[in-house]
Length: 249
Image 1 (spheres, helix red, strand yellow):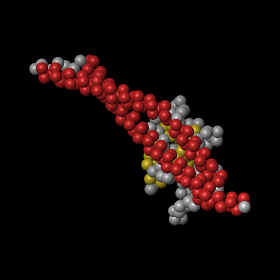
Image 2 (image 1 turned 90 degrees about the horizontal axis):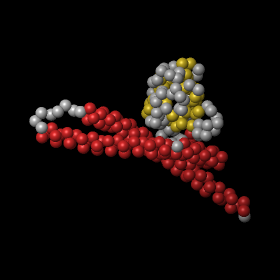
Image 3 (image 1 turned 120 degrees about the vertical axis):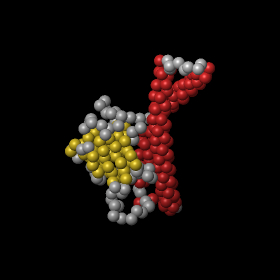
Image 4 (image 1 turned 180 degrees about the vertical axis):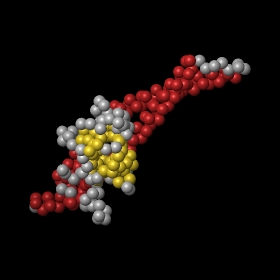
């Protein structure tokens, strides 16, 4: 397997590779913090299995290591063929969630006992740079699939805002009526329905905001990674120019 670490976002500490080689985008970078696996819109790795819950499991990346925790009862979570509920992952472990197989890799595994050194551009071949650029383009293509979901989330957010404004109008009208009448009448069924709907819309709005923040963060990571690839390609071209001039002479 080719070395893809130089082309991952700068804060990547590990990554998952989907074992299905026919997938167009087999890599999923993992940053410090919580990495969610499931079918929900807020998951870092979304699996489209019918029995997949919104959140199935999570990987917590910290100084202690990569801690894998099973959250949902099904489908079964296997690591190296053994069912698990909780463990610390090691470099090269094979994770199975239903029919999906994922290989876990640490970015600093080969240099765990060496001082961290910056990557020299001269050590990257043109083929590696091209492969890295293709990887970043695949990353952008995968991220572009979120555009439709973002539009739906924004539409839902607007509906939630409209519902909030409508509920505030009703609350003000009810408050004015209460001030005018000495004894306040019990709230009507329609009023309670509006309040329930408002509560549900506010919860939905919070979820939408969290998802949008994650999308923006991922797009910033992609932009940073692409900038690194472009700079490396420019360096390769600059290094190749003198040799080309001597050959032509």
